[in-house]
Image (cartoon, rainbow, N blue to C red):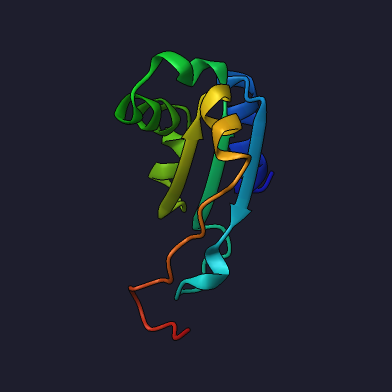
Length: 104
């Protein structure tokens, strides 16, 4: 199973998202890894009662095995359903990679 599929399965199982968007951004970073950088947008009722730090902690707990392995970075965009509606479903762009030797 790919890392991306593992992430999807765990998030769906543990966080019950209403929206789950997974973008593999590994190609934007230096190095040979093909599944090392991901951008996750998750909308879940679970986030309604959690502040930003607790939301991030919840995702990192669910994905602890992946983070201990090949996943180097996660860009997390975590919203309650109300926040998602207020944003109009807009997802922030990821910044350019500032590390390594990959040029933009």
